[in-house]
Image 1 (spheres, rainbow, N blue to C red):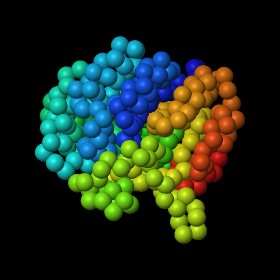
Image 2: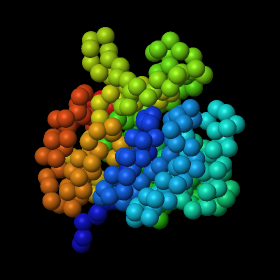
Image 3: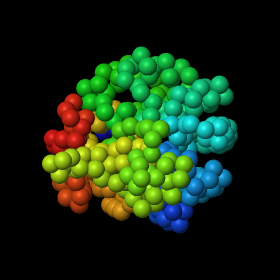
Length: 301
């Protein structure tokens, strides 16, 4: 019996990077050993480094490099212009779309095309997954706050031909708000934010009164300050028949992370040793609490 071999996916960039930085990053990623690449702006439509045409052109280049390309939608839409972008993505006619809100699910279901359920969709049970699979979902990304116990229960009920993806590395996307926290930090209104997110290529870390790094603010998105690292759980992820492992892009060191996961998946490196090497370079440490059914900021393994 052959060991279950999950694919590696590169999630969408969650931060506001200049166009030159984004294009350079994806040029390097086109040669990286990842099977799937998610592209698009998922956090804030005011991030104008790349427009829809730019993302579609980049998708074509990444596809030509042999990657499975998924176009990601925004998680929180508030304006008609954002709805127009959503419709254009859903009607692109070539690439699969990752739906991050139920509006995208409705549009894709109406078109009768298969799609991916992103972390913005709350799939907490097998019943919910079966319902969304009936609308056309071919893959779901487990919400980051769920535990391995919950995943095991959902996997038992998972419909045939629906893939499971788990967020295994990166700052966890926890919540979205209509308010822009980065603008507020600088005493700026959201509509005149002066694109201050450009100053924080990995978000702005928040600490408790006791000085412990707790959260990171990324525009309207709240993330964990710690970096999720589930590499030590690789054997369990395989046992649970997880099909795809998602690595979230970081401003530095993404290639090193991909190389570590690739070597471990191929059996050429010890996952615990590799995880320790990755975690040693993190400014606020790693976390795996949610996976273990404990507070998310804890590191158990």
